[in-house]
Image (cartoon, rainbow, N blue to C red; front, side):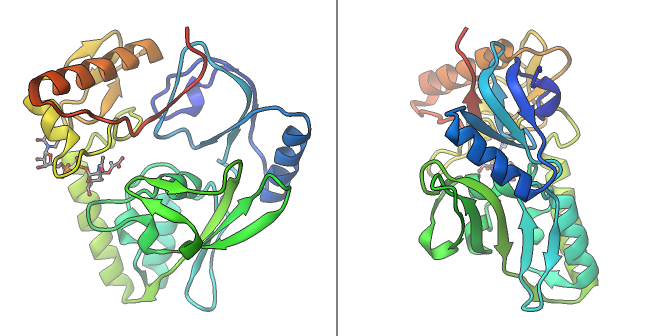
Length: 282
Ligand code: EPU
């Protein structure tokens, strides 16, 4: 099963098995089964922020596309399964007048990935709005961990080893639906102006180095529009790589090396990948 059609970059070699669990219960059963048989599992989320090498990977890749339950609780918190996307969160918040999660508008991927990456913007991150996270633990238990017991960093969350994110609960507060919607619209417009949101990409390639921006450094190094095979450094935002058609992981990896090497040489800054690179080396 080639993973390319299940990743946002449309790149990636074959996996032994792909699972699309229809419910969190089915996902929990699958995780326990795989653990008993010592089969590796890879959480794909919806395949954002992920680069699967062309040689593919062993084990089971788990896609969260069917885990989309989303509910507003009586206490105003929002409970979301791992496969919920920003469009559903934004729609519900705008309709029901719930504020606090506007920053998530346009953040690609799914709730599982948002938590794993502590996704966010310059203004806010998941750590600012998460109440608790539901996890499957390697003991085969489902646990709800309070946000305070998780350790969030810039684009990284420490969850207990071997655990799998099943969903999360977010804090929201009341506001006029029109105001919530207006804030979302203006954030979405800003994102459309500055990021290649309508192109095939894996999101930001690198973390921002302290006090600077990877996009600024890569553009200053003259690399916008640079191409390898079907992959291109975005001319909209230099910290994105676009698949302009038929790109392979090898093309993308070559560009990643070019970006790192050139920025290191020109500015003595070491860029750290944000995109998760998985799969067998060729
Ligand atoms: N810049 C350039 N050239 C470019 C891109 C950016 O010179 O091609 C400059 C901009 O002019 C600006 C600075 O770099 O002065 C920062 O750019 P921008 O405001 O676009 O934000 P960013 O630092 O590149 C971060 C997050 C984004 C998030 C935006 C908006 C990271 C790696 N990126 O981008 O998050 O959407 O702020 O808040 O932290 C992500 O993490 O995947 C992501 C997309």
